[in-house]
Image 1 (cartoon, rainbow, N blue to C red):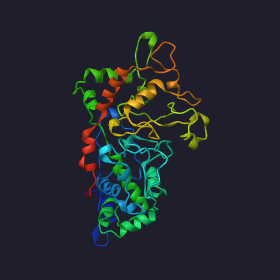
Image 2 (cartoon, rainbow, N blue to C red):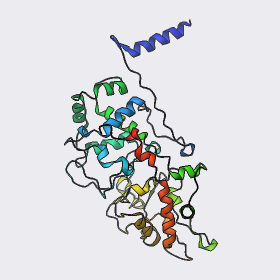
Image 3 (cartoon, rainbow, N blue to C red):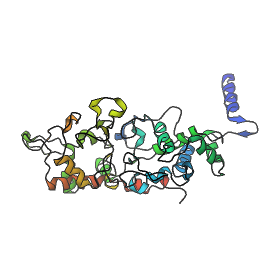
Image 4 (cartoon, one colour):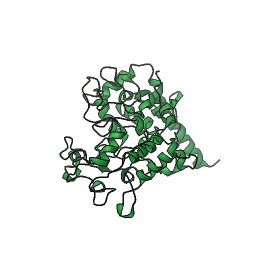
Length: 357
């Protein structure tokens, strides 16, 4: 037997073996997703996906002990049946005081590189810190959360399996939550089956899809809804920030608060449209309660401002028009297409559900 190989084996054994017991070695978790989603994943080198970490993260996602009043969990504002939103304009935490912005869907975060509506966090690990500790959300310092979990008989073995020790820390809590949230992949809607050549669109949905994908060009008699500029990828979002004409003087400055640039006033992250029929109300402030209201806004009520995104400036289906001018029947067709983005397996996947129920 090769001497160098023996030395390497004994070195590995020394790392794995301490005292009289072997430390667990977490098993890698391999996410499954369509090839057209791409492989530009956002996984930090110090927090690889493991089956044990994902399992622990799922438990913590639904664990109310992480809140100051032991009643609020991540799952309170991110409910699976609503594609991990909560159906409210603004979420409420431990003191029932509303948050500043609408709760976003957690689908397909494995590819996201900027989190929150203004993109201020660059990883799920950074993102998780805010709701866990924010005064009006879960309102609890990480060291207190870790201490509460150490007093629970449920978690020592789970942390040991995921991280090689049972000395529960706030950093481990955040890492486990991020691992679980990266597994929340939605890729099995009727639209996905259509892209795979296994689903026939209805005439209305096919017309709606064409409108969705097209930019209007009245000179060439091309009707379009101009949606693909922001939602045209297979994941149905792009890593961009847009001012979509909600206000001339926005009360919420959006990304401008982060960058200090006037050009970013009223710009917000483009959310995914996956499961959009389940995630009302819409926009960063939840101002629209229905998809019909959303389509009406884009068709007739884009408000001009210096920071309005260029793709929305004077875009119209009418010659020399200043608004999109979609007909009612066209709007209905687009909504028929949007309903094909609902992934029933995602909202019913037992691997994402509350393990305490």
